[in-house]
Length: 365
Image 1 (tube, helix red, strand yellow):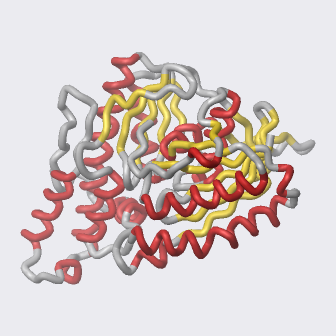
Image 2 (cartoon, one colour):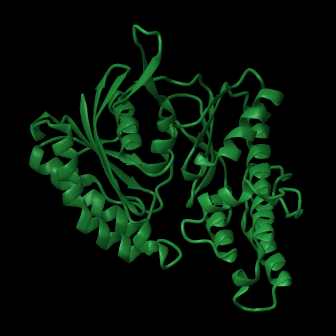
């Protein structure tokens, strides 16, 4: 089975052509055109600009994907598309392109939830081959599908979402907790802006935090001890703002920061976010007696979050499997959409006629 997948939920124009043979996966092509430079001068993603750039990039990215895959277009079995959630102007470009391909190639269209892609990214693992010299090597284009043991708890952490999702069976999701205001990734970007860092700020906060004292500032941990599994990061962001304003009188605050002050703020803020995420995840994992915990979304690339979550799981619920996606699958990409589509196809779900598919910015799992 060969799937062509398209992802345009935010600011990456992504296309992947992927071949599935039972649990074997071969990436024929995986192309991403990023818009980070275009949006960085605005300090965040501008929906109208994202849409125009998707429109400009879609045909060249599709052409490159087919050229690299070196297959005839008629060999495609299914077209997969991110239906939502995301920025509606961006989603509409991808959905329009997928519908055109579905119609012109006469292939079924599979409508995928973007967050479902982040979850199923954890099913994809690099294939390891053993050479004669007994040195392991990895073919970057060959993967295997490895299903985690059910029930599963997935922590999705990105710029637009922070959710705890329970899966008791394949393609079955129950959101048991989510942010009531800012997502964790959004808070990272906003705090980075306060500190004078460029966009996207998440990786820069992580880099600065390595040099800082995470115990220097005792920032609030919103909702960490609440009885539910919801999150809130707006108050934490505001606490950082008040600290920064109290330290600097000039409106151009970032110019007055010492490097040590910046790194201590970054480390203390990051630790506050991590403490909340881990506390909620462990509590939910215990209550629902899950056998696997998965991490997904752009913020899942944060090494400190990965490390501390693993350490806490090993200490408090040691028999629980812990998975994080390969680094290339943490940010938005079409490969994860192809994997989610594959499981929907074999589960006979969300296979649509092209006329019936519409972008949905607020799509729920």
